[in-house]
Image (tube, rainbow, N blue to C red; front, side):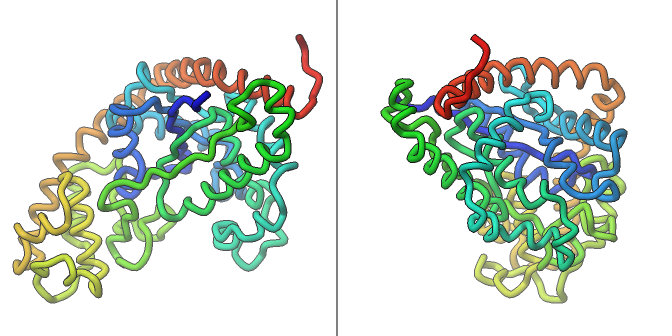
Length: 350
């Protein structure tokens, strides 16, 4: 019996959603809902893996969870057609993560580069949750037996871990799985990555070698989804460039990270390739290109900012969307957990 094709993806509610989040993830979420059955999760359990000074505490977490939900909807995700919910409302995420903790190997987690980057030099004081969150990520995906996951380059390693965990579970419990009639001994699928678009990795407006990030000290390094038109224009015009004209061919961007980043942003927002953008602007000065980029950014992003502001002002409406989505997600998750417990051998209420 083939698996039902299903897309799962999650976004952490860590505040200050920016253009990198939009182009690297959300814009693709909107496209995917036209062709796939999608589950979009605000992963609030992941958000608390670092200290309170990082995630901001209870009130901040709730505010950020609603803001991410508002960004989903303002960008065009339809919560009536797709499932939109926050992770902590579905207990199966934590339950399956524990089973996977007993399937995953320490050596696998020790290879995860993001833990090393986030923990820094003081790894002994990092939380167990930060070390273990790739296992929770695997549970997020496989709780819905998702077949595809839209990921950026920095998350491909974690998706590989999800595949390793799924495969080991299938191998370890193969006889029990077959006894429950599941997919010829395969209970969990091996999810495939979906990497789309010309700007899956958006870089800082101040340094084209660094990823756009909310943690950057300079607000001018990023365009926030809540920025108004004047702020967007100011940030684009101040974006770092080099003194040379734009190249006429894409190869000319290779040693020019800031130029490559701005052309990539234009391409992604306009739905064109970098080569097509350079056919229009190649050989010209950055000033003219930036004016066109300002107009494009304002046209695309200002309506999203306005709709987000309207939605966030009505938290009861957002909570109702999350609650309804959680009910729909729970119906799928509960079936997975019921079968998972039977396969492992847990006695559960009948």
